[in-house]
Image (cartoon, rainbow over all chains, first blue to last red; front, side, top):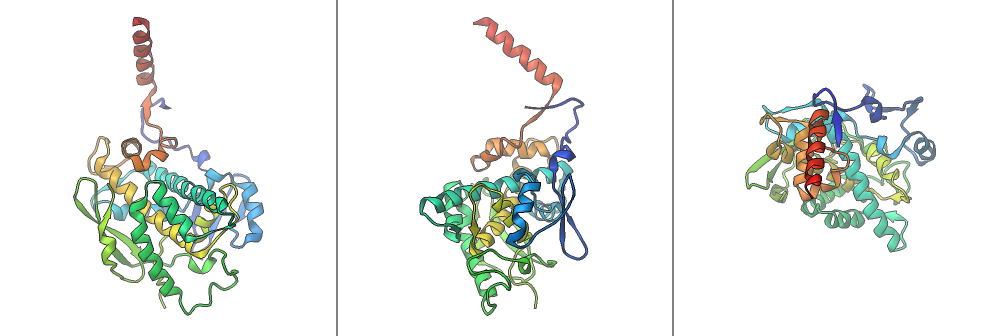
Length: 208
Length: 107
């Protein structure tokens, strides 16, 4: 139980947030640790150092991105409290870790070293997110088509993860995704993308 | 040529979070993309569910307590309950402590 002595609803202790990503005009993210300024490392060679500086639970996605997705998920006139945004930011890291450790476990069980797409989808199914699986497969298909003709990602080994090339650009055209909520009401959720692509089956995401 | 890859979260940061899980050696492109995309869906899902079903005082807003409430009520979001403790005033907590002690005394 979290005790709030003065009765207000904001509790987020800024010092606990650790790392917050800041949007820089240059498009680079600078992670600010409590000790020093650490430049976000793109390649593997930086991972050792970065892991030492930051605790697992201190790494978050930039609040601006998270807040934007939230804003588009609720009705236009709806308001979102600041501590709700920060909270979802933390939930997101929790979600990613949740999925990743499940996927990683499966990977190890099958004596493989690299987590692949199947591992992720399987983890989602196992952990109660099977409603994401079908839409994700479609998104992956589109992604692969978009990547076709590009010789992988420059500077990244085959089978390794994506480099800086795939960090987001500014997005202007929303992709409407109809979502049917638990009580049967259809909501339209706008997902920011740059190309206006309607994926028909994405409209049937059941969050029940 | 615009970005046709359809992502609104920084993949590199997602990767960083994934790598911070114990025993994760490498992650392939598909896995990284899928996780990033799934995270977007997750944010939408969580925000929407909390907005609609929350127990907050105001109906047209999304507050921390809406999120905490949703995590408790919705099975899919149970994994969040540890990081979304419901907040109560200290005096309410003490009051319910007293009540519990009284109940125990009855036995």
